[in-house]
Image: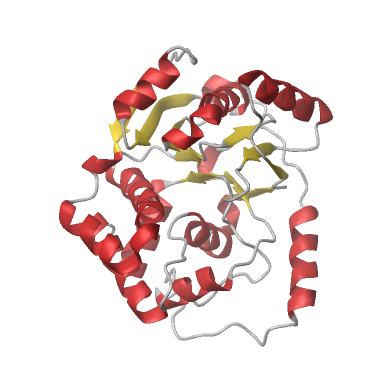
Length: 305
C-alpha cells in the first residue's frame, strides 16, 4: 500500500472560520481511553527520549519525573540528546533517581560538518531547530525496533496514560493547530492526502520505528540523515521559508490515515504556561494542575517562544 497519495488534492476547502470551528470540535470531542487490565509489567515496553537544550533545565527534571510517574508502560531505556551530554548528566544526576539504563548523547555526533553547513547556509538561524527534528527522527530509526516516546523538555505529563497496547496500538494526540507553511512543506515532500481537521504537532509523541521507517523511505527514498537534510534544504530553496515539521505531523497523518486500527485517540488537553520563577513554584503549579484533573500535560513556554 502506498503511504503517500501523490498527485491528488484535497476536496475544495471550506471557509477558514468554519475550518477552525470544525478543528476545535474534533479536538475537544475525543473520549478518554482506558488502560488495559494487564499488569504494567506485561504491557509493551518503550523508550523515553528527550531532546534537551540547557535553556530548559529549569523544567527538564520535572518533565522526567512526570514521565516516570505517569507513563503506564514498562520503560526499557531513557535517552537524552543535547549539545552537552556531560552538562545534562550533571544537571539531572542530583535531581532524578533512575532505575533503568540511561544514555546521554551529544547532538553534535549525529550531523556531519558537511550537513550542518548545508543547513546553516539554507536556513540560517533556524538550523538548530531543524537539526533537533532531524536528529530525533534519525535516532529513532537508526536503533532497534523499540517504540520511542518523545517528550519536549519543557513539558510535564499530569495524568496516568498507557501509551502502547498489544498489537502495536498506540495513543495518538491531535489538536486544532493550523500552520499553512507546514502543510506546504508536506505537499512539497509528496503528502497530498492529509486530514484537514487534525494537526499532530504536539509536545509528546510515541513513534513506532516500523511505521516511521516506511514513511521516510517512501517520502525521501530512505532515512539516512543526509537524505533528510537534503529534503529540508531543497524545500527551503523552493518554498522560500524554513518552517516545517518532519517528525510529529507526517507520522501522525500516516498513522491516522493508513493504520486506523493502530490508533487509540485521546484528548490532547495540554495547557501552556509561563515558566515559574523557582523550582518550588513549579512544584506548586504541578500539584494544583494534577489536583484539578483538567489537563493531561503542561508546557512551560517563555513568552517569546
